[in-house]
Structure formats: structure tokens, C-alpha cells
Length: 305
Image 1: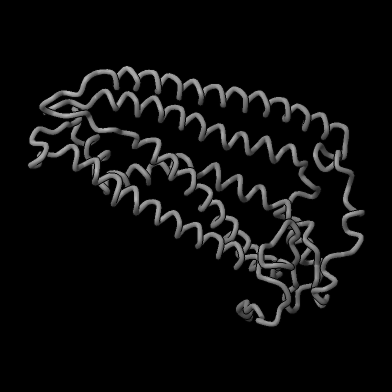
Image 2 (image 1 turned 90 degrees about the vertical axis):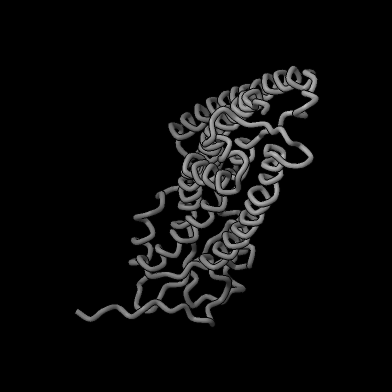
């Protein structure tokens, strides 16, 4: 059997490659993440280490009861280790949600093979869309019932999580205020300020968004190979409308069947996107509330000498 020729994207294809657009966005976000990590691990953390070691200006120093924990809090390598562990905990829900959110755009993508780019956007396309209520809740009655139930559960969950987060912040702030009123030890100075877990989770949240963008770009690239199409955007910033151009030798029926295997057969109501985003955010909110309390507990563990 003769091997299939390698897929080569023609430079003369109209529009913008959807895969390349998302890869460029992922690269830019990755660069910002590296800058953030460089600042936190190479600038912020060594300053804390300076405050906790013996030196000419502060001969006695503060330390934690556990050497491994002090290494994680005060060294760049320790911070990067905590960051890697934070990614393993925080990032997977963002990656899964990112792919699920974009998959519904694949099947409705319009075949624009041999169609001039000026005709990609159909003039009456907005009038062909379903009513606003159906786009938000669904077309069938059972679908609307499920969407309304998810909306109620999502709102209650969001309110509860906001309450938990603000309660953790309040408890943390009250305990830290009690710690602040304690006079600093004259010979040792004030204890170092520790918020390592909050910084790790903040970086992990951004890393989850970056990995979600990478996952979507790589998944879209793989789908181009398996389905025999090239996904395009009409403009550089993409937008909500996805198009595709069939590769040579691929029929319209074959492309539609290949895309139908990986995409929902009907539009997903907007309410469900909101609900699953709340689920993803809830996991992060619980972790962030725990980070407030653990950082506060860690603040009390510093020992002089």
C-alpha cells in the first residue's frame, strides 16, 4: 500500500490558519508565564531567603521547624518544585474544559473549499441562527429543563464558593492581624512574610490557561491530519466562526463524517458552558481558600534563632 503524501499547507490558502493562530497565542502566554516565574523564583524568593539567613545586618535569623519546607519557601528550586506540583493539581480541569469548549465549533465549521474569502461570511447568517432562548437553554423541552437545573446549581455553587473564599480570607486576615500586634523581637527583628502557596496557585491558574490553549492548538492540529481538512479563520483574531478547506482528494462527505466523530451533533447551550466553567473555577477556588489558611498557619511557624 502506498503511503499517503505528507500534509503540506499551501501558502495561498485564504484566511488565517486556526492552528497557527492558537499556537501563537499559546507561545505569547507561555512567554508571559516564564517572565512571571523568573520574577517569583529569582527575585521574590531570594529576598525572603535573605531575611532568613545569618548575615552581617541580621546575625540571628528566622527558620522553620522543617528544613524541607524552608527550602521550598526560600529557594528558587523549591518554588519551582511547588509550582510544578501546583500545575499537576490545578491545570488538568482547565485543559479538559478548553478542549470540550472548542469541540462544539468543529462540526458547525463551514466548508469554504474553492470559495473566495469575501463570501465566507454569509450575509444572512445571523438570521439563520436559532432564537436567543434556544441558544442559551437548548432547543428541546427536556434540554431546557436540564439547562435550567444546571443554571440553578451553578449559581448556588458559585455563591457558596465565593462565601467560602471570603470566609477564608477573613479568617486569615484576622489571624494575621493578631500576629501583627505582637511586637517584633528586638534581637531577631520581625518574622518573614510568607505567602508562597497563594503565589504558587496564582501562577498555576495562569499556567492552566496556557496549557488549555496549547491543548486546543495541538488537538486541532491532530484533527487536521486525521480528517483531511485545514481549519481557517477569516481574520487574525479568529472570532467565533471556524471554517475549513478540504485537502486534495478529500470529499465533502468524508470531511463531514470525520468531523462528526469528534464534535457534538448539535449546538451546546450557553448555560452548560457557564456551568462547567463554574465547576472548573470551583476546584481552583477551594484550593485558593485552603492556600490562604495554610499560608497563615505557616506564618505562625517561624522560629527565631
